[in-house]
Length: 76
Image 1 (cartoon, rainbow, N blue to C red):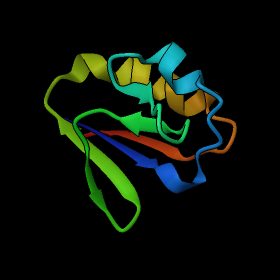
Image 2: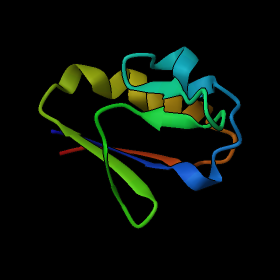
Image 3: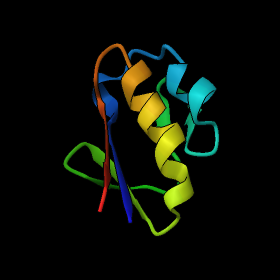
């Protein structure tokens, strides 16, 4: 299982996550911040839990590319 978490309120809108992992992230047209697709929100943290292990590599690259370090990716 892959768990991806985005702390959206700290996003600066650089678009790196979308460039690296477009199947997991997109930019909001409303506020220019990243959106973690198919996520649920709890206290400002947006989380996706997926049994599709193929999303790990791209999501982990998005984590590494993020200049404000607001993406967390874990594989269980």
